[in-house]
Image 1 (cartoon, rainbow, N blue to C red):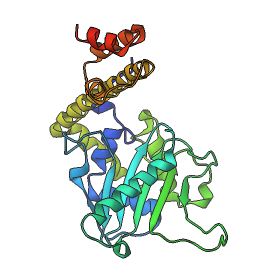
Image 2 (cartoon, helix red, strand yellow):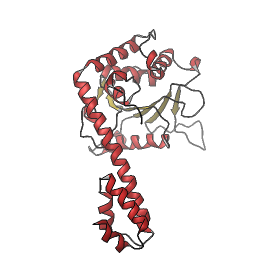
Image 3 (cartoon, helix red, strand yellow):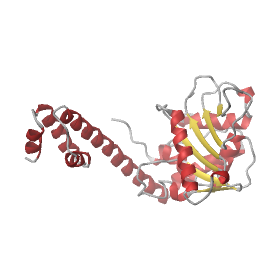
Length: 284
C-alpha cells in the first residue's frame, strides 16, 4: 500500500502543492517567463479551474490555467510519471483552450496564441535536453514555419545541456527535481526563494490543510470510480460473448458504483451460459 503524504511532506512537484503555489500570479508569471524566455507584464490565473478552489470539479486536474496582457493562454501541468501518449495529451489541452474561446463567439482569426507546458520530472524524449519546444513546419519546405499560434513546450528536470539554456531555467528545474531533503536548500536564486516561501505558507495555512484533505478524499473517490468502471467493462466483455447486450443492461452495469457488487457480477457473467441466466441471477 502506497504511503499517503501529509501536507507537510509535499514538495513543489507534488500535484496539490504545484497547483496551490501556481495560484499566485507572480509565481505563475515567473515560471512562464523562464519557460518561454520572454518577459510578461502580468498574468491572470483562472482560480475557478483549480481543484484547490473547486472541490466539485469532475475529474481531478491540478494544472495552472492563465492568460497574460496579450490574452495569450497558458496551461501548465506537472508530470511526475511518464504517461502514454504524452504528446497527444498536449493536443487535447490545446483543443480545450481553443474550443472554450470559440464558444464565446470569437472567430478563428481572433484566436490568441496558446502555450501548453509540461514540466516533467523525467526526460520525455531521452535526448538530455532541459527544454523541448515543438514547432510546426512544412514537410516539403522545412524552413517554412507554419505559425498556427499553438506552442507546446516540455521541460525536463533530467537535462544535461546546461550551456544551451538560460541558467535561471536550469536552476528552476533543479529545484523542481530536488529530493525532499534538498528542496529547502539555497539555489542562489531569488525567484526560487519566493517559491520556497510560498510552499511554507501553504503548509502553514489551515485553509490549505482543509483543502488538501478534501483533495485526498476526491482522489480516493476518483480512484474507486476508475476501479468500478474497469470492473463494469469486464462484466460487459463476458456478456458480449453470450449475445447482444441491450442498452438498458449496459446502462445498468456501467452506472453501478458498488465495487463489491461489480466483482460479484464479473464472476456471475463468467459462469453464465446465457444473457437471460445472468439477468435473472444478478437480481438475487
